[in-house]
Length: 354
Image 1 (cartoon, rainbow, N blue to C red):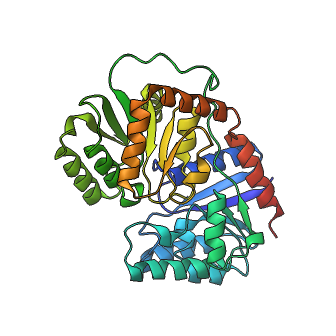
Image 2 (cartoon, rainbow, N blue to C red):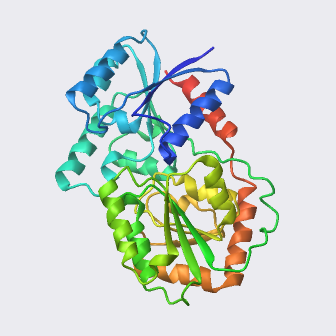
Image 3 (tube, one colour):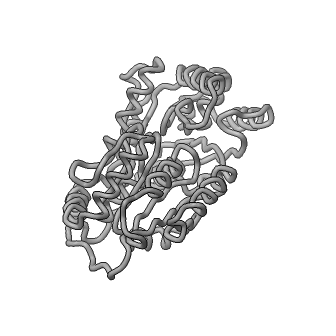
């Protein structure tokens, strides 16, 4: 039976795409016969303080020689010296959702520090797994050999009847759904700017924001304040984090899915929306343009509020277009890989590591 140690930067029950990927892959690998030990090390990743580095070093020191360690990039990129120190006896594999320096809101010095730190850490990995081909290009630009990188995209849950016509919607406003943690990179400010001047009759749409308001509470407060000052304030709702059943209900009752992110390493929520047969409006930020299947939605330049406004106006105003894109999403859903398939790819890659 193969043994895998997974280094997780904090509580992996956090409802983000990256943590969901880590959790689900660990579960599916266990179903394939792996023994998976996850170590959840809470602290200020990716810029760890001495205490966090000491705790991480102490845990790594307990692992037997030749142990296979899959480290989430949020942690691995912040610990280049530990990666180097343990590389002689541990088999490092890095899981990079997106390069750390591409996070929105960093100043020049912070961005340079994270790029240098992650570049140094990745030198000690025997292989790197990423969730999109776009991230391969990002890592190659950082000096990571392309032959050492494997792409294992997220899987999707099988939604009953994805090829069937959409369920009947009750008359009323078109429901927009955005599922994203409220942080600068997710682009809520651009979405609110687009909606503020949307040339649509009042009450013809409503926006439901689902995602944590606590990961960056100052930014979340600014977004809520901005929305409250808009003429259409009553049409915008902030739900915060929700459980899985409530999230499924939001997908089931939505008419259009919108993700205005400035950058994504993949964008799991886009494939979740497609799996539910929803038309999608998103951006070309990072891997998003590749994540959205052709014919399932509209793509606009990241950070461009006028372009996002125009796309939303089209999909809200034109019922035929909305139905056409929904049909494209339902057809694309039929060929989306599921989690067991993707875990099998990851398992094969892990087994082949030197």
